[in-house]
Length: 309
Image 1 (spheres, rainbow, N blue to C red):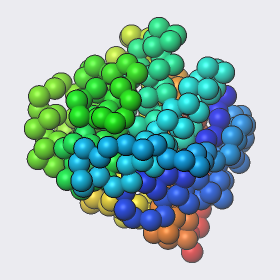
Image 2: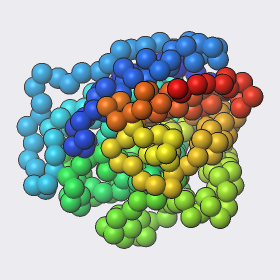
Image 3: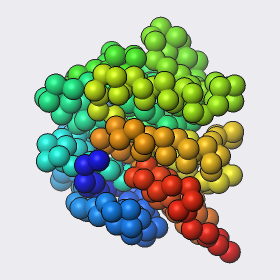
Image 4: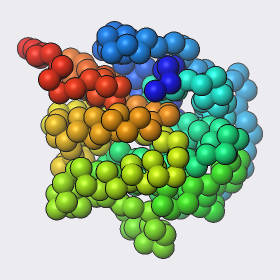
């Protein structure tokens, strides 16, 4: 595994619930550095990215869109940062920020993968499919568009073309339980693997995840993992503005992370949608850092007992 780099992405422009911009600080306070160092992966912290002083002027293709210029600027800034870390042989860990962070992070990973001649795969750990385009969204929240962008769907102007759109078989939606009708129709027209909670209830966590990871390994692929707080059940992770009941349990989420680590395939990572303003004494932030520990090699029997009182 490449040495990790931490990139703070205090992005709040992809949705309307304020607070995600505090996410990077909350991750650091929750022991991110200490967890990585204890596992033998001391991280290089690049600090927090910032928007340019002047935002791009752009035509708005959909009057419902919220904060389009800021999201465009964040996308370009994050893409550049991720490309730079990958070019240095490091593992970029994006500390979000809402999930519009992935518009830039997956684009950066895709550009680098194309440059080095390797296929990029995307594992989307989320309650939502995020398969809208800037033209199709009715909420106007751009955190609901990154998977569609990575898949090369039409309707993303004025965003730049995605560097190397991912074929459907290289995208795995995992833990999904909230898909609106427009997204459902669009997904039905392609072959992206949608492992919703019904699939996971019937087949278990391990089998569908292992099938996708085996495909990545067989093709010598790079793997971008995008972990949204709402992948978890809100009963254990309340600090998110898009809660959907019926998410993964503590052990299911750790199993996913442990399995990813055991393959050694992960080359870039998003930790997103943490809203500390909605948290319960840092409970969600600590859980996300704990999951990062599993992604980086901590085993279940290594986990210390914790008191939340």
